[in-house]
Amino acid sequence: MNRQNAVRHTFKRLLLIVAGALLMAFNLNTFVHAGGLIPGGFTGLALLIQESAFRFAGIDVPFSLVLFILNLAPAIISFKYIGKKFTCYSGLMVVLSGFFTDWMPAMFIQTIQLHDVLLSAVFGGLLNGMAICLCLYADATSGGTDFIAIFISEKYRKDAWGYIFIGNCGILVLAAFLFTLDRALYSIIFQFATTAVLSRLYQGYQQKTLLIVTDKSREVYELIRDSTHHGATSFTGLGHYEMADRVMMYSVVSSREVNRLVPEIKKIDPGAFINVIRTEQLNGRFYQRPKD
Image 1 (cartoon, one colour):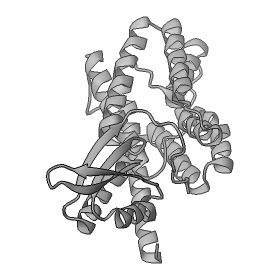
Image 2 (tube, rainbow, N blue to C red; image 1 turned 180 degrees about the vertical axis):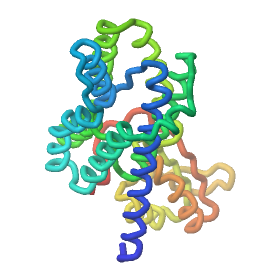
Image 3 (cartoon, rainbow, N blue to C red; image 1 turned 180 degrees about the horizontal axis):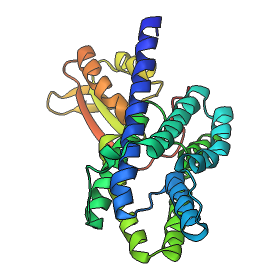
C-alpha cells in the first residue's frame, strides 16, 4: 500500500470510528436512557455500575470513567497479543464514545422523548448495531468483551462468544435483581435487534463456500491463493450437457471476499459456473487475516 492510499485508509478508519462513537453516545443518551435499558458487554456493565452507585450510594460516577477502567485490562491484553493498531483504534472508540456520552449537548438528547419502552428497545438496538458495524468496517471493535472474545479465539482457537453471551445474561440477571424484571426483558429485545442488524450489515466473520466449474482451474486457483490466501480442492467430473470433462473447484472464503472474487473469476473464465453457498460451520485450518 503506497503512502497516499495508506493516508486515505487511515482517514477512513478514523472517520468511521468517530461516526460510530457519536452514534453510540447518542443512542445511549436517548433510546437506552428513555427505556432504562441495559446493553450487553462492558457498556451495559458500566451503565449498571453508574446507576447502582447513584441509586444506592448517591454518588454520581461519570460513565466514561467506569468504561475506561473496565476496558483497561482487556486493552492491554489485546495490544500485546492481537494487534497494536487494532487495539489503538478500538481504544479510540472506547474513549470517544465515553466522552461523547458524558458531554453530549442536551439539545440533541431532548430531540427524542419516548415513553414506550418497547420502541426504545427496538430502535435503540438498531442504532447500537449500526454503531458497532461502523467500528467493524474500520477494522476495530467497540472494546470490552470483544477484546476478550477475539483474544481467546485467536490464541486458543476456541469460540468465546458463548461465554460472552453467558456474561451478558449475568448482567441482565443482576439488573433484574437490582431493579425490575421488565427492564431486563426489554434489554433482551434490545440485544436481539442489535444482533439482527450486525448479521445483516456486517458479514466479515461469516464464510462462504465456492463451487466453481471451470476449464481454467489453475488460473482460478492462483487468483484465490494470491488474493485471499485460501486454498482450493479440485474434483474431475463429466459435464453431461456437452459430454466433456470438467473440473469443479471447492474453496471456502470469507463473505467480504466473495464480491471481489466472483467478477475476477468471470474475467479469467467467462463460461465458469459458480455456486456460492453460506457456510454454517467450519472445522479445520482456515486462514484468518491477522489484526494490524
